[in-house]
Length: 509
Image (cartoon, rainbow, N blue to C red; front, side, top):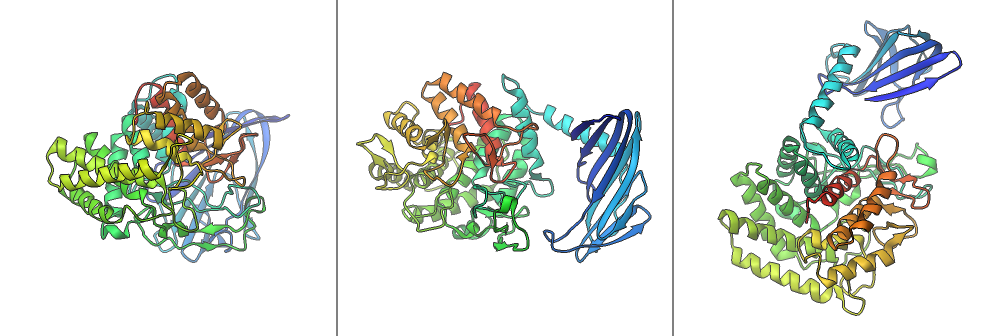
């Protein structure tokens, strides 16, 4: 629910917007409330379907105005007379103190029956009750309760209720570099987010959402483990072909505008480990496991056992030659480690001796080939001098303890090489901003090695980057704090929740 207020020379008006819990169709409710005096108002609705390409046919109907074009339809009902011309619906009216004038915009597929009309005042009450009940059902006290609660609400808002899938962000093609071409579509579900999101939800008592996410995950990855993708559609759709919308100029001229994401076809080895870690976390947290879930994990491990030595494109989805990324190997190690723990604790069937050999082989290879002894740091790839903020996750994954000198050396090296005005790049690149989630990982890492004061100061700075309603984008400009990339970004919000829990004593690694 969003309140916006205008104070004018003639009076004051409040606009109340909400999206009620999904019913028969998707609705946006707006109530214009007069607070003081008499304020003249003008409203316009310019509907365009197919990413601005299609102007719908507008006509009057019993409920107000109807717009239709191909598979799409929308209805606008209002408490004042409306007029349509040249593809625009408009109204002029005056609101006085104590008056409440409603507007309801409803979307539905055009072949479906006309949805029932929504009572705007009841919708407002239902929305308030839904969110109040949901956030109060969790556990999020402590010194940062407000930003944690806000982030959890945003994560819930990024969840598609019918399937449990959580999108990476609600937008497409907001640029990492204004005027540049790094404009990606993030309206999909990344498997990598599973472990982080499950930790955030389970750690704050929201078990139902974690269970729904786990069930979405099992459905999405069903089939041949060799065909595992890094991302899927909200309903588990595998095909997300990338295309460009060339009739749109893009945000601040940042072209092209992209629909779909070609990175879905990349090989990212760490995803197998992330999925295995996420399913292990769900089981350890008391979410009832099934035989099918364990069978699925064994299938993934069998595939990973034969392919963990192969190069990949890394969690950063590098569109170039595959490399031997250290983080990818660490997460492959984590996949085997979690399976071994499950067998040892619960006695589930599995070739645990073979898994131990593979786990130990990965560990030995990473420590030999992925560590630069002269600089006392792990590196992005085998034999490379480049740094990677994902290396901060080595202790979080349990690969090495926080007090290991190699971990401390890696944290120091990342701060030296990837810090820009105190915030972290994901890797050295002059064409993008600081990656917000990476700075939250640094908070956890600093706290883990005993530099709590530094961790708290960085966390407070990161909180200051949020906008007025608590949103965080994928990246930010360290000098100005301006948000960059798609928003709101689930990865950034999960980073906030998990870092706050870490600083409050709930170790996540």
